[in-house]
Length: 403
Image 1: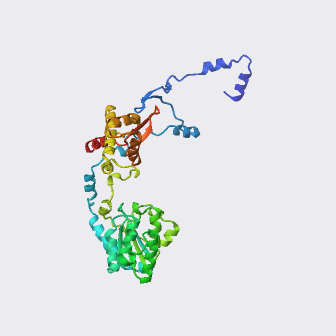
Image 2: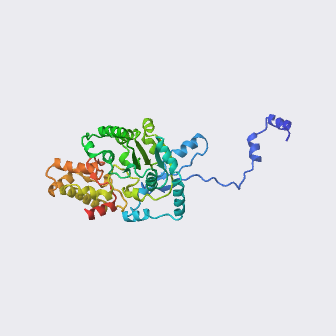
Image 3: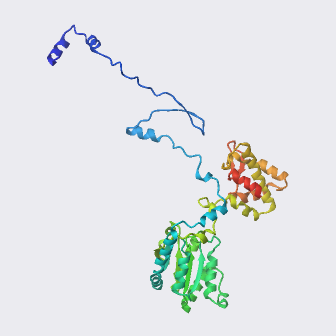
């Protein structure tokens, strides 16, 4: 139909548009019915709630907010709940030499040995050496110091030993180069001994080599240790040869301390096992909070306490162990406030068992475990104070049998 004919037909007063549409409209009977989104019951296992499934907007800003409005599901089986490995098995596995590394280690050792002359020249020019890289560097540093000056006065400090103290390093340096009749008249304060030591070395033209394995170790990370080490190394009579293994070791020192240390950094990656370094630490506690005492270390803490304090902790463990067993907790379930023992009831139990004689004595004993994070004091939903042990049910079983 042409445009003019259509116009003439529309201008006709007898034309019925609705009737024309009804006569010419043909419906497609093959169209499929649209499926409406139905309410579906989805059970969330942890909360066992029924939620309604809804469609998501995928385009525009509605899609952004709609897709980010729900929380991501967190795993209920974290790595921290994995069954603990036995300490003896861990040590045995840690001593296993990976295959194919023997030739690489030998090649790298020969390569670094050829640098000894260069490193010796750097020390003679007033620089200090700091070695980093993957692998134990103890043997390499020892060989270099022997090569450089076999007759030099050398003091070796193992920073990976947590029992190491700054006072021990200073006293060892003094006893190594200063006669006893001279040092006996010196003051005992570390600050005074450092000043007198550096003055004595410069006056008598004595050279001292200070070797520190793992200068970034836990024992030497505090500000006081770093400050006094910088004072010692600032003397022209003292040469420092040290190693680091922590990735963030450069962040230990300030700009002024870096200037005093005057390090030349050398990458000596050799892939050797940290056999000696790891012998001074609890490998099972790696990655865990250092503020808390691990379940394997509880017996060492209890051995230093009185019999009544040990009995109090054993009673707390037994009470919580029974509660967790009644609730059918798994072996890897960690004790929480829901498994806690009512504090007032626990105090009455200790009094009846003749563990404590009064409330003050009870608080003193309990505070010892609270400070070591071997116990936690909190309030439950009803507002009552409870105390619980933050260890797994499997750990509690071992503690019950050991204590």
